[in-house]
Image 1 (spheres, rainbow, N blue to C red):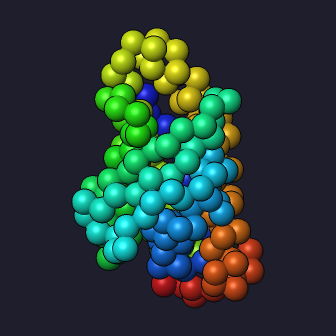
Image 2 (image 1 turned 180 degrees about the horizontal axis):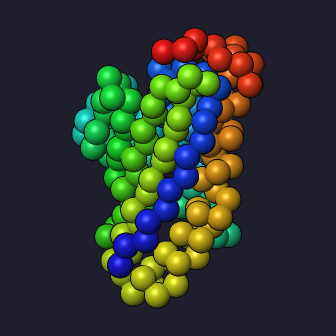
Length: 164
């Protein structure tokens, strides 16, 4: 069973700045409220690289391991597979795409939640997809914009990247 979730937001900041914030694994807890800590991160982010974070959602805390599938700074596309670090075969595929826009950068995040065990198919994936789709992705994109501004010094509502 697969559930799809996605959200987009126009972010004030250059597309390159936004992409750099998204791909800075150490900074994930700054703008993703469900990630409470980065447990392990790669020295160099590249295809095949892995990192582990602590997730807090659905009233539980667990570790999730992610593996980079695509890292394309030219197209500003970042995709990775994440799964709980407990051996459960269920997983999610996440794709981030950042496109230059006259007013900053258009950021789109899409997730495919693949529930492969009975409990996750029957209950958890529906609840988790609802949380992600209702507010969590939108909140993360807003916090991403704030994190981009703290890194770049950009002011929300301005066009720091110019008209490109």
